[in-house]
Amino acid sequence: MSTYKYCKGSTTTLTKYCNRSEYGYNGFVDNKTILDPEDDVAHVKWGGSWRMPSKEELEELWDSCTWVFTTRNNVKGYVISSNKPGYTERSIFLPTAGNRIDINLYNVGVEFGLWSNSINTDRPGLAWILSYKTMDYIGRGFGFSVRPVCPK
Image 1 (cartoon, rainbow, N blue to C red):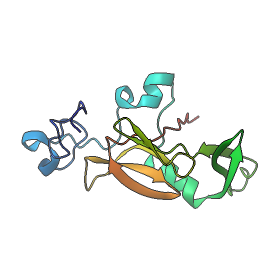
Image 2: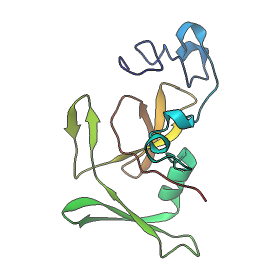
Image 3: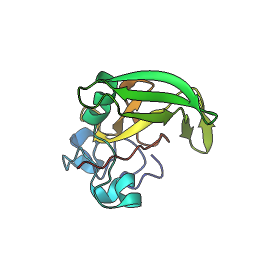
Image 4: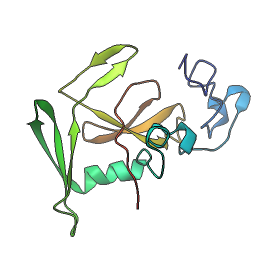
């Protein structure tokens, strides 16, 4: 959080994306819980309608799909296949890319985390991720993967 541009050094000094005054700098609240396009890395890098998935979209991967751990082209990860009628032929591969803390990389080939565009409303210094097949929240300073989506 010491380098995060929307706080003054900690999760209780937020200057954007804060819905609770006890987490905002000098009581700041803007009630934003979804990243604005200019703060969404998928939109910034890819443009158009591309964005990071919502918490609900990531929950759908967990709730409505089959997960199979495998290796593709020497990369470990999960093939996630839809169980929804009309979409059962669709799947994605999510590599177990691990995560970064500062400059260090951990758990490559073992676990993954996918960022959502959704802030945790109970603790706005945290954001939602799909991590190792469960929904969880974690500090915004951790380095997890982004899997862009482009709704039609």
